[in-house]
Image (cartoon, rainbow, N blue to C red; front, side, top):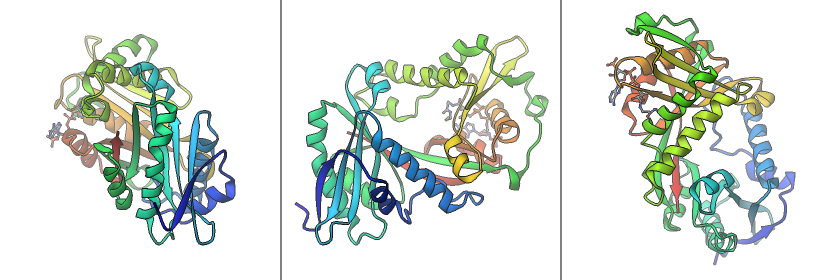
Length: 329
Ligand SMILES: CC(C)(COP(=O)(O)OP(=O)(O)OC[C@H]1O[C@@H](n2cnc3c(N)ncnc32)[C@H](O)[C@@H]1OP(=O)(O)O)[C@@H](O)C(=O)NCCC(=O)NCCS
């Protein structure tokens, strides 16, 4: 038991508590985007934390310092309805695992929160729990592994700053491609979903032995399809060969919440796949994204061992802005 903090499940998180837990938070996702003001990024994070805490089927464990009752850390556990339905088992995710930035012993706070987690997981009947942390948060890495969480993937995020690096219009011929790059149409949706099902194999779902490859593929297919069907916040580029065949696609999502706080639009969570690797199509679609998609920054996330994707991003002058670990238990 921790000598420093007490942990309780709470019905709600007051804005002041979230504010105190996030003051000077060191691991914000946008801390390396020069054009995004840190205050605006933190305001967006506070809003997300507040929304998560208030979501249906979210449970909150709050750690408070024994000495003065100040909030020391929080762990939120959320039912993942989409994953649970698809995989046929109750699954939970931890959207927030936070320690107050000026806390003298983050490891102790995290340990205390994670000690209380199994009770909550058992009560909710979850057979699977996932969590993602910034790789700089070494205390969380240590405590999660000690608590039995297993590393599933290391994510690298690259960002293209349109102001610094410029924009333009691509010419497929310059990439040796005999065809066109255009935005997706309803007739492409099935082919995009199938390519997504087949080509994404390095992600945490595929690497988790408790999840079948078939189910992992279906998750990726649905993800790509959801981008095709959401033309408000998402955009999908396709490369169509001269015979009408799909040679590749790139889908991305615009972060409207961050834009509301900062005035800067980030296009991220990009999904990129090609039919025939190493023929320049990936590079061409990434160029279409970085140059022609809406947004001030264009982001690409991938696994640390996805050498092709990382190379394509570096060749386009994208900067590495974030690295994360994903754990499953
Ligand atoms: C990652 C992916 C999109 C790259 O697209 P691609 O069309 O194969 O890449 P390109 O042919 O445009 O190559 C771009 C550069 O990366 C290099 N490259 C491509 N794949 C590589 C690999 N596996 N290892 C090392 N370098 C690689 C190419 O040689 C080229 O560099 P060069 O011009 O100096 O020779 C493609 O391999 C793919 O569909 N992978 C499966 C899906 C996926 O993992 N997507 C990324 C995560 S969203």
